[in-house]
Image 1 (cartoon, rainbow, N blue to C red):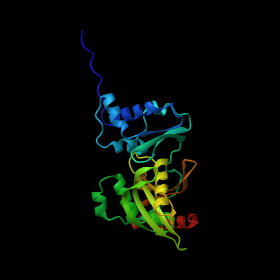
Image 2 (cartoon, helix red, strand yellow):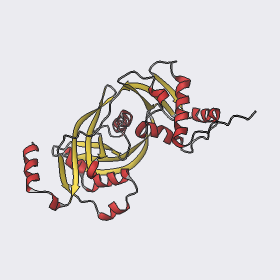
Image 3 (cartoon, rainbow, N blue to C red):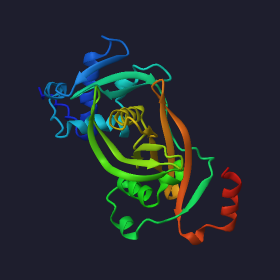
Image 4 (tube, one colour):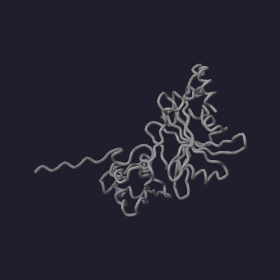
Length: 273
């Protein structure tokens, strides 16, 4: 009798899905709509499944928070209008939690505002990825200032730090700023390029960090996202009842000064309030 061939071992993203689905299955149903698990469990699950543990275990969690959908075996357990999120729950600890479903996507009907492009050409030539290019364009064109109506300065990018009861987080870029009344602000910026998606987890983490590290500053979380035609959508976000809410949204297009017409300027004068 011919031996049955062994099933192919999951690779790449399939490997991520297999591991997270198994971890979920081990806990689901025991504690309701929220349960915690540890990073150490991944090694045992990978051994149990007969697959190689990813070198960067943290990327497994990151991928399902911001880039990819959770496996269907997990998605199918949530009721309509709800979704599972993965939160930090301390050092090397995470929490699956069921929350209201919400997707933040640019609104097509909004006016696009043309801004003279101040990005150095050499930056555009050598940017290594969508996220890096987006952060650079936001920084060189002072879009945080333009969008929020404050004077803001980049303090640090790709900040890795630790938040109490959450664990390690990374903020794409963090600004500090001031307005004409002397009020001071801290602005954590998320950069969303390619297929990355906005999520409640990162906004919650950004707000928690700002409350921990900048207690006297007003926190105004911002997310920037590439659209079609190299337009940039800017969102000011907040979290209400575990749901990310949009405080304000504007769309900008970086162009040569000659591309901004008198008609454009008249339109902005009328609609700029």
